[in-house]
Length: 215
Ligand SMILES: NC(=O)c1ccc[n+]([C@@H]2O[C@H](COP(=O)([O-])OP(=O)(O)OC[C@H]3O[C@@H](n4cnc5c(N)ncnc54)[C@H](OP(=O)(O)O)[C@@H]3O)[C@@H](O)[C@H]2O)c1
Image 1: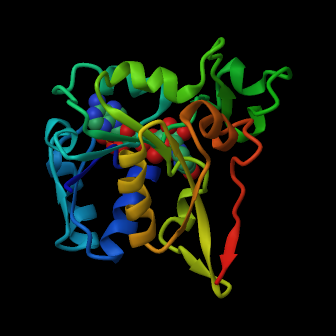
Image 2 (image 1 turned 60 degrees about the vertical axis):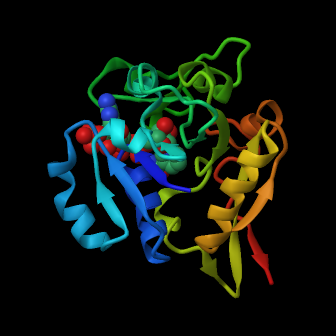
């Protein structure tokens, strides 16, 4: 199974770092093109290659590691998905310009964190992402932990728990295998409509929970 990563920021680069630590091959991309990733791929070693977004998006398993506000633009219009797997690592939050009035909005409980929740109406976030990637099998994962712990799966004599959810059992099994291969303890939260909201920032009750499974 080939792996692509769309986005090389905080999440995308740390997913790549976690894969690289186990020698797992992947192609990573960003908005500025492969040349801009030269120092990152040099740091990560030979298993991680820089590519265009179209190249990363043609993999069997594609991590979506872009900001919510960019997701539609980035994901729509990519080559046909034909049942390939999208790992939805996004959270439905908008990053605020610290100088904007929004950053000081007293009605926003997240203003101090520099973010605000996106109003999804009656939808859950992976339902929205799924609309941008028609024909893909979406698995929600890698969105609930701080990115700095992604390259430290094993701590305190145990393994950090990484939640995942999805509606396709085979797709979930593939993502579970990646989670295991990089050293985390996978926990299946069920279907996208149940597990997704539970582990999504900002308000999911399991969001940002850093559990460790003791062996
Ligand atoms: N930061 C966290 O701790 C964390 C944790 C879990 C989940 N998340 C979620 O992960 C997602 C990404 O967050 P982040 O913090 O990694 O954001 P970020 O650091 O701003 O990175 C976003 C990445 O998306 C890329 N991008 C934008 N437009 C693109 C395009 N057209 N084609 C390819 N790549 C494009 C950017 O490319 P350039 O580098 O060229 O600008 C950048 O590499 C968000 O949904 C966030 O909620 C974040």
